[in-house]
Image (cartoon, helix red, strand yellow):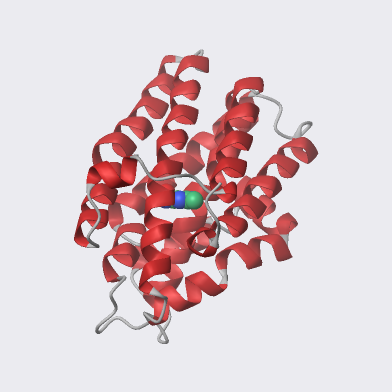
Length: 234
Ligand SMILES: Cc1ncc(CO)c(N)n1
């Protein structure tokens, strides 16, 4: 296992993120060890299901951008504004174009992706994030963003080091490479530092139980989201 992977996995057990993950218990396990994740790692996941997931995930990320944009708006320190705008920049200019490219590789046009109908799972998750993000402050916001950001990184890394993962002829290899890649890991490292600082500055200790409930709800919505590829359109 490379040093950077080991370091990232141990960081996830520490500080506030370690506490959230541990206190979520079963809910975190269900998210990160979901059937969809296991099938993707083996390469056995149904391809139509993956395609539908990819489109819903693209639509999800568009709303995730709006949450990040709200964090830019709500920043009252220049360094926070820099951090959240760089997060937004990365998503808009790197991860989203990559999603469009994946969709095209899987035979779907950009127009098709953008005009796709939405599922209940997508709407539930994005509307929850957006409403909490509008009500909350910067600490609420970064906590809401964490399950998505950290969860996929943990999943990608664990796939990469698991000998059972099919890395010879896996149709989903580029998905694994994205979330276990160095750029994504760096994003996680920076985000964890900002999370700790915002918690110190904004009464994280006194607010812990409320923050945990927001984190846990987002985790449960992530778990439900793994089934979008099997879900009905609204
Ligand atoms: C639903 C969901 N959660 C997390 C990520 C990671 O960016 C994603 N792409 N989609």
